[in-house]
Image (cartoon, rainbow, N blue to C red; front, side, top):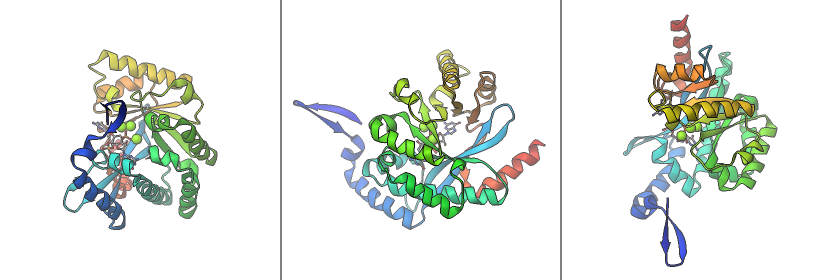
Length: 281
Ligand code: C2E
Ligand code: MG
Ligand code: MG
Ligand code: MG
């Protein structure tokens, strides 16, 4: 979204909406029915504790199996869902599916933390914490099994209202994480006041850190900063063993990335875990 100066007034110019509003109009109605028609898929990507090399959690990542456009990744529809507010329905769906997964894992005596991404609109939805509590009660899952990931920009969009929602989640016992850390414009003074327990370093700093001195310095400084603030630090976008070793030596707590595993359909997780631990031992 770019700002265009038209005369004396500033308008927000959104190229996606402008150039293909027709197409987006149909995408909007399709996205509404995607949930009813059961076209969304819950994928999960494992999070590994560095050091012990144990899977300690998963991040829930949505996919859309569209009947004609094919298999869509979040970047192709989440921004649009956010602009239109449809994200609230989508988030509800993901929280339900994630609670399902969590209950299934517990039934197999597997205890992992499930992380779910929530967006700007969700933070303005001050009923969401109560709705989430209902979902968890219905699935007989503890709030402490969940972590919600929020980007800095989602928080800074309306910091006052964001804080109210986040405080409510935190009071329920849900963990909170700052996602894509380092890419937004949040102030540390502000973040310090939030009930957050995790920082996720954005993959743009991690992916190429074995070749890039600046990235390495940024990652190391972020790990130290997070630890000094009493936070757990997670690196996303780990694509090779060199990066994984670097992160381990820097004291990073957890890693997530294609080197460990791509996102897989949620219903394959239990088999994947069994396979991991069989081949490791
Ligand atoms: P994110 O929360 O930062 O998630 C990490 C993204 O990085 C995921 O992309 C993941 O597949 C990708 N990734 C993980 N490891 C690697 C790696 O080693 N290399 C590379 N190049 N990429 C890696 P994905 O699934 O396409 O999701 C993109 C973004 O869409 C997410 O970024 C998140 O902001 C958003 N998103 C995904 N699912 C949801 C959802 O259910 N709700 C909301 N509100 N947003 C979602
Ligand atoms: Mg995330
Ligand atoms: Mg991220
Ligand atoms: Mg991201």
